[in-house]
Length: 86
Picture (cartoon, rainbow, N blue to C red):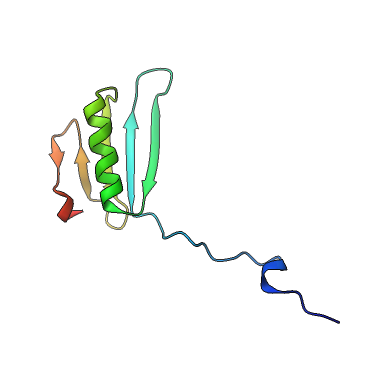
């Protein structure tokens, strides 16, 4: 009897992607309503929030750090923490 290699077994493989650390939430006009995206890297979440804000289509934009629930960016509340605090 031969043993199957690890990649041929039914056991799930560990993810190659790092866990997400930031959640970007947007409220958009109809027909899109609300979207949620997650990011691992602070710079990517920061850039996405600022890009969406510059485009001016979103009614609400918020970025939350998942580890502690800190709000790092909130368009309506005027919260815009510098990238080094993310």
